Length: 320
Image (cartoon, rainbow, N blue to C red; front, top):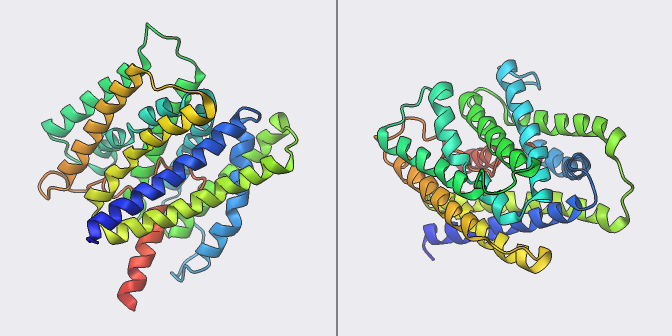
């Protein structure tokens, strides 16, 4: 099997696992606050994350070298996480994905002021077209927009900001700092909110929370394997396969039908995102390739980052 084919298949598997992860979030969202779901999913993920981070042999401590950027990224990731979890609990899965798929567009846009990236007319037009796709999905004026739609948009913006900050400071900061700070913030802040929203959970729901953490870990390792096997320009667009999983899962478990506006809008957003990925793959189109180097889903601070673990794996191969 060719390496790119293997990478694409592994990525499809990874994003299928992530979609299953999101089904559990939506399932629990029918009974519990997003704050509670985030708290337990991160809490159950901490032992796994700690074991992975114990292998980090780079010298240093947990004091960030860029405290203000680290703080902004932590806040952005926490907001993205709880907003994303809330959106899944309130909206059809396909609609949430369609909005979250704007992340490459937003990363490209944010790379201008934060990375000093120069965005040409072609990528600029792709951003505009993709944002028009969001309007097609949301249909402002012809449909009632609620907190779920706002939460999905906030999650997309927060995740994009968190990801672009990693591109800004990632070479200087230790992976353990970039991973632990958002997770710790999620546990502390969501723990405080639990005093106001906590509802007792039966064993099966605790198990579902643990499964969310386990699926995120498995999906992350699978994405790492995908990027090690294939080129980023082949692997990255596979995230859009989640719209197929969302359509199937939504119909099977939640009686959700994919409405035409969401299908058309998602297609426009996906086409714009893929175009940006292909443009960034050209050496003369982007100095920083911020989208191609963002290898996780929307950065929510609820699970391990792919880029950090992938970089460590590659370094280990070089030493070997």
